Every structure is written in C-alpha cells, then in structure tokens.
Length: 283
Ligand code: DGL
Image (cartoon, rainbow, N blue to C red):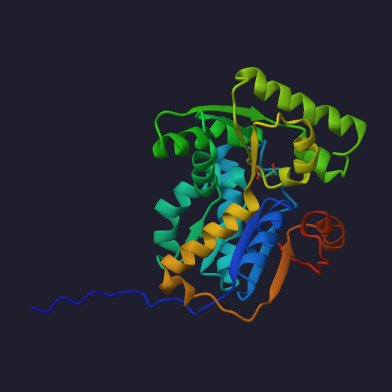
C-alpha cells in the first residue's frame, strides 16, 4: 500500500508585511527598510481602530487577525507585527493555531522576543524596566518572555497611558507632554531605583527618546526597538533561506491605512521622516 502525503505548495513570492495599530509601526518599518532595502514592503496601519493598547484580548486578537488576513491577501508570506500590544495579546495564538489553518507556509513575527533578548544582553544588574501600553503591561508578556530566557531577572513594568495620545497629537514636546514623560519615568524608578536598562516597548515611544535621554540617570540604558527588530529580521532571513525565497526584492514600498489617507500621509512623516502616499483599505 502506498502512502500519499499531500503537501500544500509553497506560496508565490510576495512583499514583506508590516502591521501596526496605527502610525507607530512606521518607526519599525523605517529601520527595517534601512537594514534590508532590497525587499518589497507593504505597511498596514489600522488607524480606524487605534488605540489597541486599551482594548481587551479578544478585540486585539480579532483586529490583528483580520489585518493579517488582508496582508496575506496582498501576497505577503512574512508579516512583522510591529505593535507591542498586538504582539503581546495575539501573536502566540495566531502562530500556534491560526497560521496552520490559514496557510502553514506563512510566517508572522513579533517584536517582544528580540526586545527581550536585547534587554538581557544589556543589563548588568538584572533590574529591567518596561515602558508600555496598559494592554502590554497587563498581558505580562514581557516578564514571561524575559523569564523564559533568564530566571534571575527583576522586571518592573510602567503603563504609560497618555504617551500614545500625546504623541499622536504632536503634544509630546509641550509643557504638558514633558510633565507626563517625567511622571511615568519617576513612577517606574519608584518601583526600583536600581533599574539599569529600560525598554521603550511601544512603537510610538522612540519619539520620546531625546526627551527621555535628558532626564534618565546616566547609568541607565534605554532600548528603542526599531533597530533591534530590523537586525533580528535580517538574522531570521539569513537563518531561513526558504523564507528569503518567498520575499520579493524590487525595493517597492506600499502603505495602507484603514482610515483617512490624507491625514495618514500628513502625520506619517512624524514617524517615517519621508513623504508617504497611502491607500485606503476597507475593513
Ligand atoms: N502600536 C501600539 C503598541 O506598540 C501603541 C498604540 C496603540 O495603543 O494602539 O503597543
């Protein structure tokens, strides 16, 4: 008796997808494009439903899966979830359950694991701080992932509820914005003044880097994610030549938003430093 094993064929090569709840993921895309300019990229910002940081598990999971499906429909075989909240609340279930059903040859990667690895390589005294959205903090994904890699760590999380709206309103450098940057920094350090390494674990927070560097004690290192994620993607593609073959290399960039394209184009420059012509994606 002969055994016939049916295997789905590998996918037609396509662009690399980058997904975020809104604009913030453009900070990650910018670094990825600098690191790996040869690839084609499709960015999707779910601006119509941002913020994800205040929403339930179920909502973040449903929104994320729906957006990923749109990126798969656009031919992406590899998608980076740039959003920490979506990485924290939806990535694991999508990797373990949904991808098998949708298409086992597609891959979805998040931002938390590479950030955790970077934090561990930088800390000297094992006291780590996390600035993140409320959703990322309550999911506990950072402490869980960090402790999987190293037991002897103390992880302190600070929800920074007002940072995303302040940045989206371009008010983060105002007097009020500066007050809230200082406030959340003080609250994190009040948990343990010996914290020596802090992650900016939200796609928007790199825009606060300069401000934070002015107030943070000189012995504390701040980790912004974009370069870490870009380098980690490069290493992933080197380790997975079969995925490289599924990613096209004409150097094109396409931008989709689920909300208004004109306001996306206007605000996007704050995060991407380049002009963007986006297209609307109807949910
Ligand atoms: N992109 C989200 C993150 O990185 C922040 C914005 C939001 O709350 O949706 O957590």
